[in-house]
Image 1 (spheres, one colour):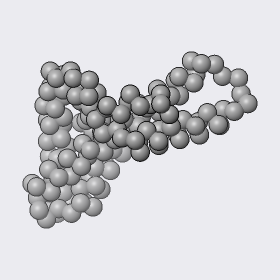
Image 2: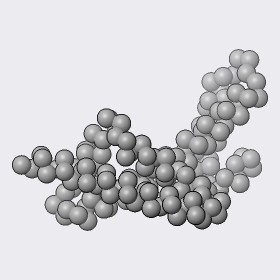
Image 3: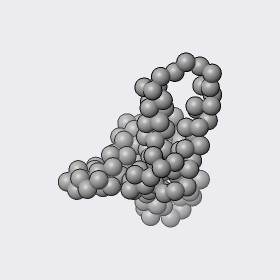
Image 4: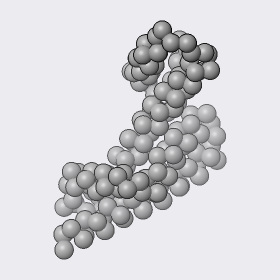
Length: 146
């Protein structure tokens, strides 16, 4: 568990998240019990679990920003309607959603490790992606209401 302590400096990661990541890794390693696997595979599992967890946490925060922004633009839109439209964008693998997913992760790492210029650029690009996604949600809602 001490191995994961340095990762707590990453924005959005706390002790509960570290515990979840640790449990996820334990489950994956337990599933491999009795098989012949080397250190490289073990490190791959650890890094993969860490990366996935950090990405999901940051992306969830970005999606909350999308929802907040969409509600601000249209008070008569419910959170459910916004989430339904976001689901449709996820299903078609929308490029702005994919970019936002990656930018959220890069922004968190840049901010956590003091790469201020990179973090600043990521925030600008995240904002652009969020605005584009909100516009897509709004235009889809306009089509539905007509």
